[in-house]
Picture (cartoon, rainbow, N blue to C red):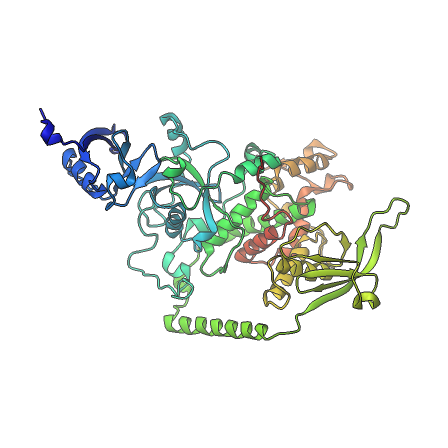
Length: 568
């Protein structure tokens, strides 16, 4: 029996639960402590009482009621505010987590639950070879997966896990390095880029390969029309990057979505970012197929043709032979990189010296609805200077006061409807994009923005080049409905079923029906034909170029980057 003198007036009993290996029940210990005992001393006293020979270096104390980690081992219990009613857990900091990648495949990784989400994402991206981890974050699924699931549900989830660790030379759970230990990557100290191509020292990576499109039946099960409230609810599922996983009620073996969050993708380089570009393409592809972002019928066909082209190249491409690539001299690579930096810096200094900022001026047709006349469009003289759009009655009146002036930087704008040619649209939209960021047309990125918009418009054009023969529908051995959203596929299905004879349907081994073009009605517009017509515009693109075009077109959609929030 402990005497009162031994206990002391300031000592008290503290309960600590110790988490065991998976499947074992946790142990509970009661320790007599004082308020001036530091956290490190408490863990030492606990390990001595456990008397189990194992590595405790990854364990830390978790305060359940306050939902916080006690990681500062030099702090005392009094400083943390720990008292006798506290319920502490001595648990591992690294725990298993189910991570769904942008390609909709789920992998099981070991992640640090005590680090901030920002650092946890960086750790995940480092293992998966994804640069610029600050562009990504973790998102809760639309359904509630934060609660503890039953063992039966966990076993069902385990069956759907994508096992890629053997091909990545990584131990189960993704804790080891992704590359061969005999190959060391050399990084540029300025921008953090590898000095040699990724394929030279990473080898084949399944994450850099696009996933095949799902059959329409499977895609239909995943498709759920989203209202604005649903979109706002999904946005609210992003985890706080400044807090740890357990602080946000995430437990081991919970499922989270790894997604590109901030809609700004810096320095996409096909040479170093094969995984990053592919996963970004997959996120864009699924947002189109599940209609998470709206697009027109023409844009849907354009995205479908790009998907078909990428799928076709992925199936026909042979594995890369890394041994055939020439070795890169690190010194020459560093000098080349320095030369590019110096040239870019010189260009910036030239731009800083420009006093006459370029401007756009042209006659545009402005839509002004009128009740008593059918003529709603009227010509005005528009001037785009700095970050401001002004329009006048005519060119001669441009020296006076404008009819209206719109400031694009940091202002709420009313909608102006104008008729533009493709050339005008590319120039004016590029200027508006830069102006929304507070930049003028003097920036070197203006010409690049114009080219991207022009290529986007060219891809949207469904008309085949002059002299081009009609598309051969037999050349497409894939179901066209795999490349469009289920709602869009149903819209075309009613138009497709216009055969003269049931014998004109030939069923492939994939159980998909394909229609004989000879027996189709002349007035029937087929989805397959429309996709193949659009495919003529991008048929010469390489696999990586097609993915980049898809990403650029996705970024050009009007609703791209727009988030919805519920305001009460």
